[in-house]
Length: 173
Image 1 (cartoon, rainbow, N blue to C red):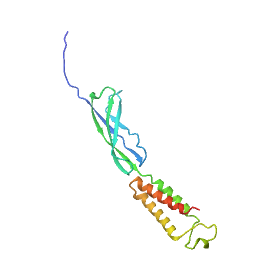
Image 2: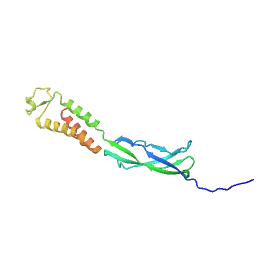
Image 3: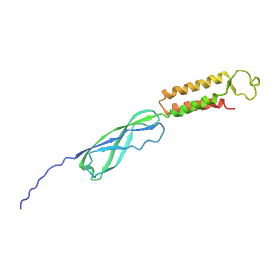
Image 4: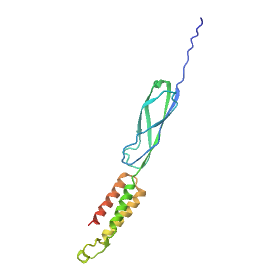
């Protein structure tokens, strides 16, 4: 009987783990990050991948890097040369909050008369504000509409909404 002993090295198979792109609104919980895996041998699985991102407190709009790491392959990691590729996290601002506040502000103005007369000179039951109150209200609306386009941080959105809400109070009975 003949035998042959052969020694050799088997190169690890290449494995690419790429973080999938994700998006979220500023201030919301971070999304459940996922990956796309290429190169696993049929029937093998990977679990336990960890993620980090560069979004800090996640309250500023922009694009950030999602970084995958770790993970355990069902047959062991030694059979693979693992490469990781980052994904992108896109953070948007909830500008709908401002849009809703602007609609409420415009509705609050309906039926309100601008007058600089003393309250005793206005017909009873008439809703009115003086010129400076209306000017401040109009300015708050204009500022909010500008913030929809120019805001960078969630705080910008919240400040514009708060300003409008304060101005609406002036128009309540």
